[in-house]
Image (cartoon, rainbow, N blue to C red; front, top):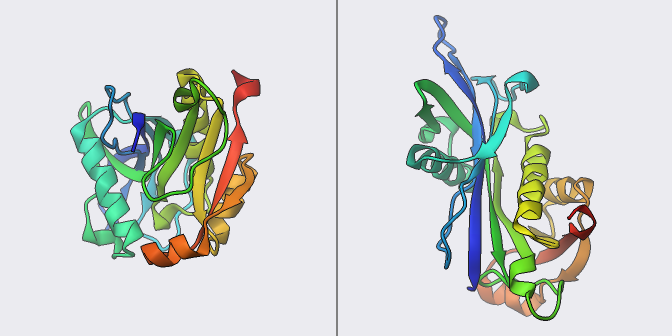
Length: 223
């Protein structure tokens, strides 16, 4: 893997203890940092509030998307990913952390990877030639807490990642999605991505996973 730079993003909100039995708290979305060849840029985060309900409506005035800056944030984001990707119970992992004396909760996370390709994934074709390794990037590990689905947090994370990618000088942004993951495909299409290529069926069988498609969007007109 020729990773040049990687960025964690997160969404979060303040945590407020409640006198009632169902305490309310502010979730945070954050991106973890994979191994890099160059120093990692800070992660990005988004924050908001939710209560212990099956689905929570987010107060957008409390929402923040920014780069993660502490080990506690990254740990909370990692816990969110473990519980989400493995479909564990919401209370199985703590996803809260303290930031400048305020308690917050991670509600979403993704990685922005500046590189030619990701391990075991089909590679994008744009751009070509000298400098392509600096101008191409991939989103990965996109994750939003189940309790706050359908609040636009995934869209907010992707939008922030695109802004950061522009700052890095990225011209072409990619994301891999499973064929049968319709909610994710709808999110990326809404965010301006289009289909570029399909993973070979033999590769998916060899890796024992659902077959994937590769989606692409151009950032060059925004640079």
